[in-house]
Image (tube, rainbow, N blue to C red; front, side, top):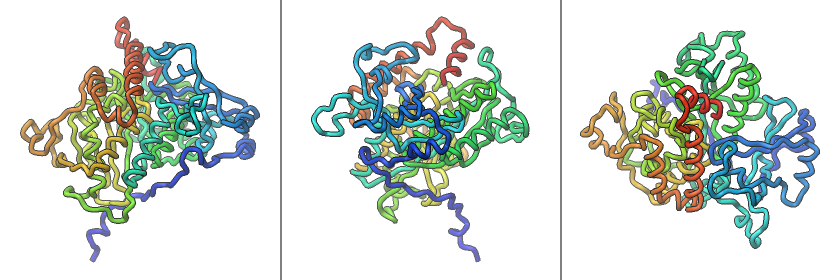
Amino acid sequence: MTSTSALIHEGVRYEPIDLPGKGKQQEGISIEQLRDKGIKCVRIQWVDLVNNIRYRVVPLPYFEKLLKTSRPGMSLTKAALGMVFITLVEGFGATGEYLYALDQSSLRICPYAPGHASVMGWFEQKDPIGHDLRALEVDLCPRTILRRVVETAKETSGVQFLVGFESEFILLKNTMPIEPINQHGWCNSPALPTGTKEYQILEEIAESLSLSGVELQMYHAEAAPGQYEVVTGPLPPLQAADALIHTRETISNIASKHGLRATFAPRVFLDNCGSAAHAHISVHTPSAEPQASAHENLNQIEASFLAGVLEHLPSIALLALPTTFSYKRMLDGVWSGGTYVCWGTDNREAPMRLCNAPSPSSRNFELKTLDGTANPYLALAAVLASGSEGIASAKELTIKECGGEKTAAQLGQKGREELGIRERLPLTWEEARLKFKESTIMERAFGKEFKRTYLNVNKTLNELMKPGRETEQEELKRLVENY
């Protein structure tokens, strides 16, 4: 007779990877390997505070010279982090430079751009202050912020994380007016007919990701017109965010090659589903058998992590949903995660969805409160910092699981009270900014200077995205052409 445990869907098992810390980086791809692969240029990339992917292209011989310097990297204006489109944000000017120190372990070939590879880095002070390596670090550097959060979690609680992303995007023929490549819906076979442009694009995306070392788990059509989703496998948080940026560049460039635009904008069609950047986060403990919690299918570490995230989710929402357009997607009843601070097993109307709950080896939390306008390093750092605080303080999970047939929005006030659901996520960009400004965890995890600077950058972004003199079609055109 078959046991119940044998019938549980275990899922694919992934384990955390112990990677060297900064200063002890793995070498990644060598110059010789790059030459063997026909690489002629390297894109030195960074992601600024408003999630623009920026780059400088250097020929391979010059890149090799950079690697032989005492601090491999290149000089960048400090405005590289605080420029929105071509507008300087308050606090940034024409003077001052950072060193963008190359992270050689992040080197990847770019099959979407023949002959090119890409590399990420760290923003550092050009002039050392003493001999402390951390004194070189720039507190506004998104990759540095995420790395610090991950290292702190491991040092204080022995906890590690794995993160995988779902990249939702829409293929557009035109941006004025908006015209999707097709009108087919969720997982519908006619959305991928052999020989069509969309078929060729998805096939090339899959091949390109594979060649560059990013694990592709699947792709399929999503619900909105011309919408698709690419799912990539879990990695340690910093590497996962790097892989997400590479995935987005792959999607955008291959779509462009075929005369289309790929947009990750959160809401293109108001009468249909929006696009998200769902993150799947698994929590890995040093103990093989962590203590059980009062909640079925959650150990105590997972429960405390979830409690920490839910406590701070409203105040960190601005990092995950940074534009006014983000709040047109986060609604109740459209499977976007809803507007109530809650969680539930396979509940797509909860901002934190527990996936594959019965399987400790592949169980994970899906963060649905995240879209493609967010800098993934910052959003992920905020979520992991919140969860790590919950773990460090052994925070009790007082919000009961939102299960059954009714969503939090459908339960009514009394039903929500019975589950301990008492708070809503920000419903507008203005409300999200206020909660972020009042947030204490942001100061503890990121510092006061970051919070002040990010609010300035975020304000400038939204002023430029919605200047108030344009029609709705013109605003949408600006959105999809920038994200």
